[in-house]
Length: 395
Image (cartoon, rainbow, N blue to C red; front, top):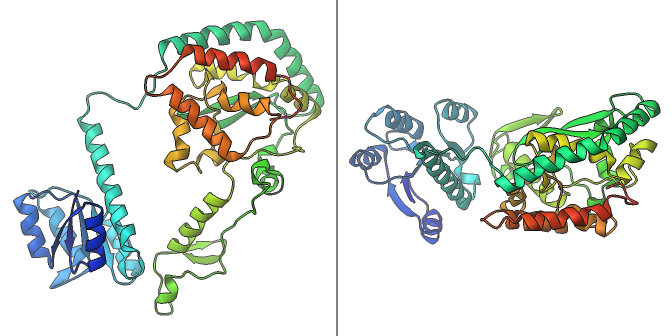
């Protein structure tokens, strides 16, 4: 990777680039930079200071983009202090990113340059490829088994489904089925028989703070608007290290808000499992304990949203927190009605840590990908599922 730095490249910036095996071409002004770009020397990302001799970094960007013989590359603009007008103008004109150099770690800027470089490479590879990898196809043996198995079970359980629907209708008002958005390898409508009172989704945030099994040893973390940003404290009064956000009539800089949000994501639990969930009805408790509420997911299997065996599809509020590579690997496997995590969980009476659940999800993904899929492994998990269908806990 080659970075063209326009301005006075700091010594620590050069040292970090060298340690990351990044080639750094440093020039003092826009004229020298244009010469390098016109010659056609390989440049993957441009990092440019706003204060340049004779003009500005944004002026150089406009000049560069107007030259038809210059290849367009990611462009990062640096300014010594945050300027709201410059920030707005830069992004309106197409700059890739904007940093306040006086209050931003140099390594963070280089990491962003690497990210832009990788994203550009992925975009080029996708545009040059004759095959689309946007669709995901199950192994034919797995898909065939899913269709046959789901069809036979649905036919056999039709009378049981009708009786359950009648019981749900008699106990409480509302629809007898429940549809929510879930995330597997894609987002889809997830079907279940309703086991909770209507309006239960609105109670999840309040209950998760007090009754989440995965959070029982963790203290709930929230954004602090009263604490001051350490980077803003280094600037003159009234100046901010990043754009100002206004949330619930409170003011906070974008950097400090994002920093706290990342900290919260690591400290708070990703998954939610309510202990002694008060939202569950009497019929709901029975159909959960016997897993009857899961039966409509066979329709998801027939539609191709899910497989019989896979990793459990997640609610959106859980899936959006799985951003680390070590955690998001679970999505390489298809969504499933049952799987390694569910079998192990029910075998232990519903007691399992969040870390162990992540490990088991990743373990199944490892067995599924890399041409290691085994029909017999799936069949073994299905057979291990049957003893756990009737359980004491409503997991």
